[in-house]
Length: 200
Image (cartoon, rainbow, N blue to C red):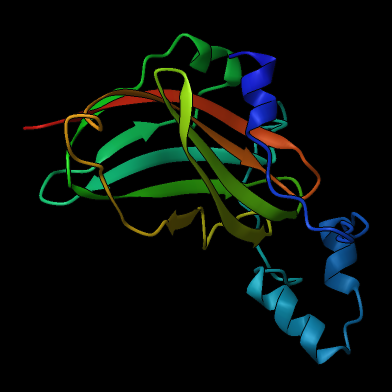
């Protein structure tokens, strides 16, 4: 994937927004214990002194691990792409491609886990091109997450439904790139894939 393609798929910047200071899980847990609103926020992230964190391999430095992406198409079985053991290097040569019938209603489901530290402002970015021309760009905020626990081993998000385009000009092959990035502009995964819009 070229540098231009990578630079072309960046999250929108909000003027004046500054990312807060990084803290460890232990620091967050102890932070302003008497502040009720902060306690609610920490609870929404699953942070507590009694949380039993999911075991992580000491060699696995990833903070966000995309376990799988699934394409959910109306009236057919989900197309599931397992990504847990993939790296950017291994994905370079992997051919991920599928067919979508025109006018089909479809959505994307992401299953992932967080490890080592809290990740804030995770976003899913997607760029779609046909014949080298950008035809669609998507930015979906996913939220902020604490590391997964034994009780909650993964997170799952299903994005809003879309309708596949139709007509002679819409049919054909498309190339796409999915990218996961956080508020600190850390890129957690870049996934190139392709799809065909078909008549039948």
